[in-house]
Picture 1 (cartoon, rainbow, N blue to C red):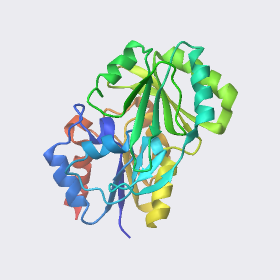
Picture 2 (picture 1 turned 90 degrees about the vertical axis):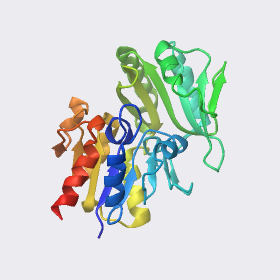
Picture 3 (picture 1 turned 135 degrees about the horizontal axis):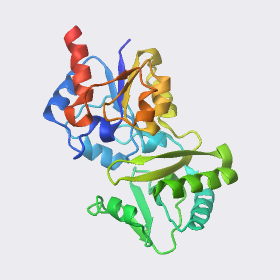
Picture 4 (picture 1 turned 120 degrees about the vertical axis):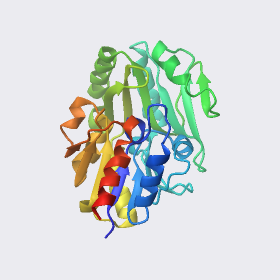
Length: 276
């Protein structure tokens, strides 16, 4: 039975400039000859495919925090959506706090995605959008409304505001939804992600396991942030980067001495290759 390696992308496999070094590509691709390799990320299908040019992925990818499981060639394995009625209700509740979300939705069955945002933006949201100005899936709306199939709803702003908002939303929707509140390292704010109750990386890994028939006792995962904790708890070996959030490191079996900018994942895999 092959070993399985699944890595988060941002601040784990990717460098801070969103690049992947030639060293990391060579080690990862060498490991792919004898192992099952994939990613578990908050990013969309399209952006993940762009970022992983030259990287061998031989298993379905866990995307959008587990709301979408799909292969590199666009085969959809599983989806976990928030429907339009609930999504619009969340938008209305959030507006009470003077903030409007980003909404990541499925635009069509060919895996084209919509990135919906309000014309009313805070400074953190403006900073995030500045990173996506070349993307063709941005949809600005004056009166923001969701689509039929929504992968996730994301608020960005000050920590205390989002904590208060999370408490408010939980009082309404309870455990019918999943909530992830964590620091956003690129912009320096916090984000609150709202998902289907079964949309997370651990559920995503189980879906991939059932699809491929692999043994979870052979699983090693890599991560850095709180949306990685579920897969840390599921894996035989959970590996945190040196730059991981301190609250995440306590869930790891191994905390690497290297950061994502120092090719931490590849250095770990190189050590395994050298042991053979």
